[in-house]
Length: 113
Image (cartoon, rainbow, N blue to C red; front, top):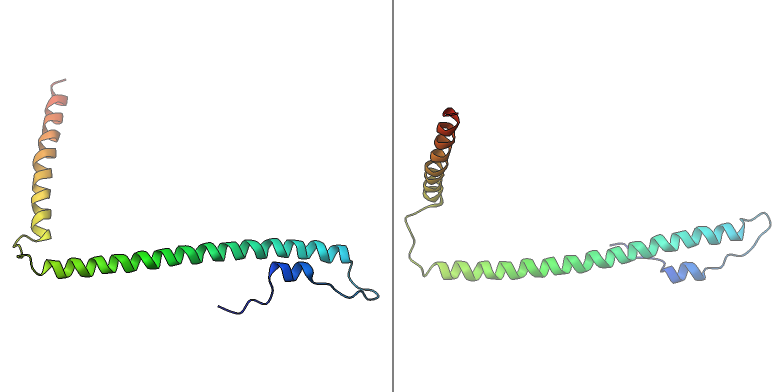
């Protein structure tokens, strides 16, 4: 991140030397007040995002450690011959059986009316 040159306090305390044909000091002050508000908003948002980023990095580290522990613990368990694909096929067949029977019953009931 680039170096920040001014704090909101630096902007508030900045004094400009008056010159002939210069800018209206009230206009300059009003503009700088708006700049300060934006600057403070950006500063708060940056701090909030940094805190959220730190929290998420910490969570990722925690989950990575849990995953590493889970993988090392998995090696001691006997492996099963059932794969995710087998489970999905069984689930699909079960859904077809249950919901297919419901659809057939609904169709039969409607045809009796």
